[in-house]
Length: 311
Ligand SMILES: NC(=O)c1ccc[n+]([C@@H]2O[C@H](COP(=O)([O-])OP(=O)(O)OC[C@H]3O[C@@H](n4cnc5c(N)ncnc54)[C@H](OP(=O)(O)O)[C@@H]3O)[C@@H](O)[C@H]2O)c1
Image (cartoon, rainbow, N blue to C red; front, side, top):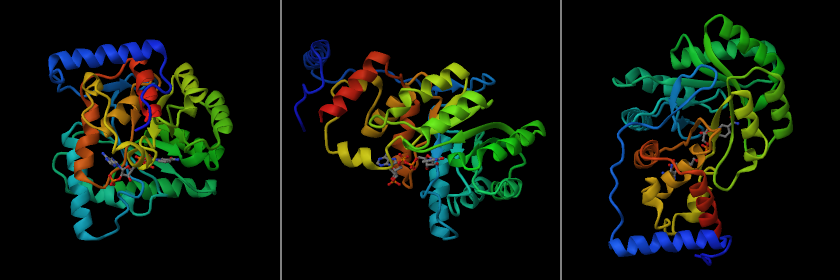
């Protein structure tokens, strides 16, 4: 662990010292009653609310037809629903993931009310409608809650297709996606000129480029934001999991690093939800813990950044 004071100003140090001594005088971490109500945020276009933690499926749900792995992914999805999750994000780019989601949704008894989100991903605009129809078959749904143009590939034509699908009632919301740092200028231009319900972009405690322009633009234009790669794939755990959580983590209802990282992401006012991916039930349990308790304030968010930057 590096020096704790690096990156902290005098006010931060005083805050941390005061908090630390308050804890020491109690002799234990304060017990807080955590609400059993999941944290939700509104989709600006309609006011419909969504739980702030969803689920990604890149790699983690691409398990083909192996019956043991399919059974295991069913348990992961069941845990997600049991803990209050709704949004599942996938793409035709993710190998067998869409087929695996469809299989799991059919087998599970308690699927609550899934919010189905996939993407269109093809260079050829003429192939968009057929790809969407294939996704409908794989998920076994008539209507998708959200279809996004994956990595803004051939976005002009695909957005036309998505708009038609929305008018026909086959798609409820439409959007575009990008990954870490890529194509931000073009992305911003599309956000400015096209009516969109959702954007999906990379945002996590170390990758905060979106704060400069994309997140303010989403807030200004009334566009919901899905944060992908909230753990920078797995890199945040590799960097920090052997370090202690700050002593004030219980104050923001974070029992582990996963919750710390996720609460940072979803406490940005412009972010609607995060979609961490996992292939492990225990990790899903940890991640869904971020759906409960309170979110950090803007001041606490700055302390979170400074803490990880000090490690
Ligand atoms: N352009 C796009 O549209 C785009 C780009 C990137 C991502 N996405 C979407 O966003 C989703 C999330 O991004 P991502 O999958 O790249 O990365 P991520 O969610 O940041 O990280 C996933 C990794 O974190 C690990 N992990 C999850 N929970 C953990 C926990 N509690 N403790 C320790 N490790 C944990 C997982 O390993 P385990 O399996 O061992 O848990 C997995 O390797 C994707 O799945 C996809 O749906 C979309």
